[in-house]
Length: 520
Image (cartoon, rainbow, N blue to C red):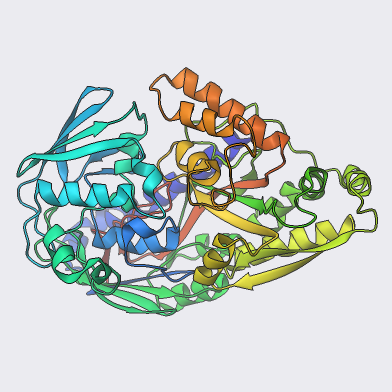
């Protein structure tokens, strides 16, 4: 089933690329001379919109995709992902893995931060060690034993154990390189108001709840930045993002609502970009709350929800039911994971056996993304059919993260991108007792025996067969205890005007706009 979706979306991207190529080449050969003679002028501002505001300017302090979609313009990391999600050089020109515990990176010698300071190995050491003790993303560097500057442009990392995801984790925006002197002279909080990176764009202004403005970095190491300004506008309503695209208020709309796909695709003034993503949606269950602390109740909730109806009603086919929270394209995805049946009658039986034959009341928290709200409304109706009265609580994105982080919810709808293309990024952060996450702040090592051990095993060996076997057991433990209800693995859907050039989709939903141009 997932293969059909991938073929379909891959064809959509190919068609969009071919259409753009034909347009860019000027159509038929008969008018090529006039096309070449005509001068194309470009706007000095690229404006894109997304459903949620950023929550911080500190790359180490969040895993929220809407935030990283902005910060990727301000910061660079040692390595990055290309369009096919392969790790490629960025601030590092090359690296050598001497053995499973030692990596040496050679740095570019022509990079300067936005404040004019040259980037050196000391900045890399400072940034990676800072990440290793961060509240939100320390798991990315949990295997790091030491980082040292061998010389101005050479860094050596020593690991405490083999870490098969180390390179992928360094490509995460959380591993952005920051200027040590600037941070120490001004205090680390300076990054929350006046961030400085090495990226294609310098930070200008954040109007909370409204927009973020950036301007081109004239000293960017990776060539000329062709568009002077980039503005991210917050437009929570998906339909309003599409209207803003149609009217020219914005040049690019992230998170196109599925029922707008054909509207954009059939309009010659717009382009539709769609491809399989590394993003899944799932329902988290707070097993510390009354009612939800009963495994039979959690299993009843799993059985009462029909993922296919969500695909049909909300995603219009731009997603597919997933039996795990790992996306199809990530390492660690279990193709043979047990299928979750939709069985409301069995759900009622489990509720009765748990002492809730007459039902009970609960809640589900969601952010104010329109698609998320619609999913929760479907879940609300499906739970009602088995006797569960579920209140949908809709919150602004930052508030939503705060509330679920403090465990206020009974249920919550999460969308999560396995941005490193490895299940470790999702499983470890969410379920290991040492980590911050939807579950991590509630976990204890003995809560679900064997879970910590299997998560540790999977991230401490380079043997991919051993890792896959460990993740199989992780998934079995999670399924046995009905800890969450997987829903879908979705596609990335972005709309642009036909005048936008060089915008690049990425499967991790962190899109590349560094060299984008917009025709007048």
